[in-house]
Length: 114
Length: 115
Image 1 (tube, rainbow over the protein chains, first blue to last red):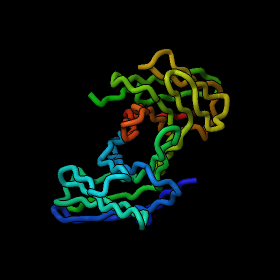
Image 2: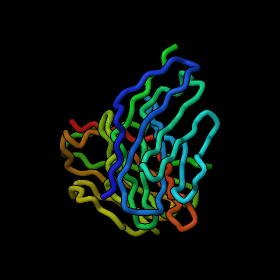
Image 3: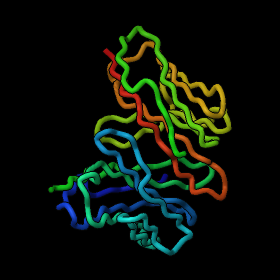
């Protein structure tokens, strides 16, 4: 079974600084999909960024970017120019494709300090 | 429009009550999901509907009964719940087709308290 590990239960960052959240996963598949979801205290789970494993180029969405290392099975999220609104629980998730299910990590609680 | 809506936002029910949670999406997605989420924990999958048919039941107790009346709607019927069932219940949907990246879109959730 696939597993997703987020080794940082809590992280903090100063406003306007950069922070990196770690995620590793275990799979025997060669084709799969990785996601970072954000869940603010208001609780709605929002998709931040996605990465298809067959793409070598790292995904970027505005201030959010990933460092995808397929051989190392690592998928970290970098948040640049952190804003107060970035404070949330961040979940890394893995999906194996058709017929699969979404597997979440335990989450990283990010605090942004003014 | 990437919106999934859920009603009600909050629900308090006794252990003998019957209530229903509702979820709706208009993105043309053919897969819909129910998750249960405890505080500071990731969502736990409960049920999956694919093309309006139940495809996954994660050994959920029968006091939870899902229903998919059509491709846009998903209900979760609740009966004789226990206090440990108190949680945030999330609905999600996805395209679930080859050529997509299988991302799921989540609703805001229903905060359920069982007294």
